[in-house]
Length: 112
Length: 111
Image (cartoon, rainbow over all chains, first blue to last red):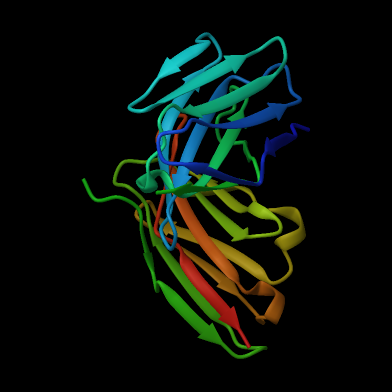
């Protein structure tokens, strides 16, 4: 079945620097891709949903890249600020969207 | 629109007790999920309902974990009997089509 590997598990960056989190997946039929943000003590908040047809996805202060050839999904926070400090999770599913496989998460710490 | 709600937010149980966690999905969502979240294992699917029918019961969690959905707006997760290794955050999520929306979770500590 689908496997999702997320790297790095922990990431510290200075305010204003970029932060990149990457997930690789195994199923070439993967169709839906998600990034969630989880602040301490809170639940998972959807950051972005990506379809397999779109390689570059712009959000507010971040970009999500999908490389289907390499089966890689990345989240790039362009100028991190302390409010970005949280755990980030990628998730992947095929067209049966209920079967979502989550990465193990990345704990991002943005230093002022 | 109200999001997914979960109660209680925190629960402390003695080993061997029965506990029941509750979830109310987003109104109109057809799918409901229960997950367990731990630092080591990440998110693990416990149960999945579509239109109140149990579609997946999470295999390894079958013996002591039982999720039910008696109506479209309410689900419970019963853990019986609890063990210390069940200490985790239990998340409920609902979806209409392809995106899951999560509740705030119940943090369970089993002593």
